[in-house]
Length: 247
Image (cartoon, rainbow, N blue to C red):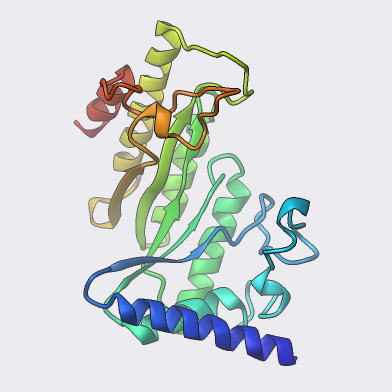
């Protein structure tokens, strides 16, 4: 119990001081990022194992503050309460990945934000990272946008990219057909976002990098080409596809 009090206090202090420090300068915050396992469960010691390489410097808030996602003591609810108390004018988001791969995770996100907003803490928006590939289900993409939009909250695509080398093949180079398919996927995502999220709820789309060289997916051993510009800042077909999606 003592650990719970200490960690809760530290979380409150960190959120409060950070938001107050940037008051008037930063208007939107991801208050909670990646709270769910891929099964749509809140990350707790029983539902999620911290990778061995990270055990020394990571812990799970839910181990100490409300392991039940639908409990008024859970850390997600408290985090949003502390954020809004620090600055009621900021726009607050919750953000997670793989919502389009595992639709149960999107369902869990909807249930959680609905619960939080019924219990006095205001979540203003939901972010879906959307790190996808050419094989990502378009039906699932539609489902995610419809599900998040049904909350009535703001919806944003927070980290969009379309990986071409998810199997991490060495010395991979995409051909013209693959690049055209990537363009089509970017176009589809943008069109689906506009179709399924009402205009008043659209908070924007962030592409997760500028050039392929900068991408978190690109390594020396296994190159990837997930973004809109190549290493020379030249527009790829993906750029045109993205633009067409907006039109």
